[in-house]
Length: 166
Image (tube, rainbow, N blue to C red; front, side, top):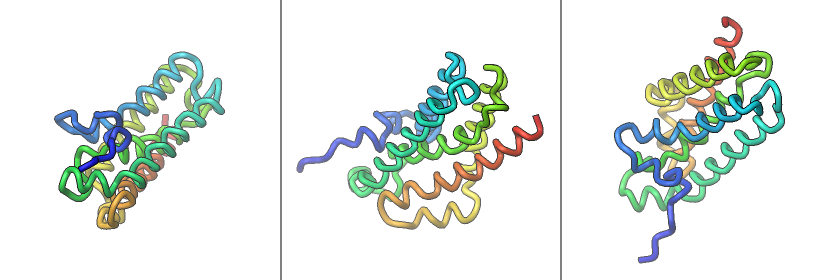
């Protein structure tokens, strides 16, 4: 049987990492956003580059979920398998895209909001407040993806509120 490679839906193998494969899958956009802020290409200095890179990651890993979701579920023998972490990679981009240039005027402040985005997303992805949890029942890649995009939107709201307080 010829099995298609599942590099993208496992975020290049991070989905096989234990424990907490979803956390491992969330790290690439966090690391990229942090590096961009530290190297002076964050949302306050080069917003087009920052938002373009994160949007490209979001789009690429959403596409991976949609195109490889059925194959991942067949390969790993379960609905929304823990090895499929492209949904976490995509979902994590949403709160990172909510970091506003004015709130990342220094690297330390930018990294603070990257941390807020990371922890808010992970907590909300694990809790899955309604309606996120119910959307996992959608078959295939869309079911793998949608709940994490909703968690990403919830986390983006947390980031926006946090930026107003700090």
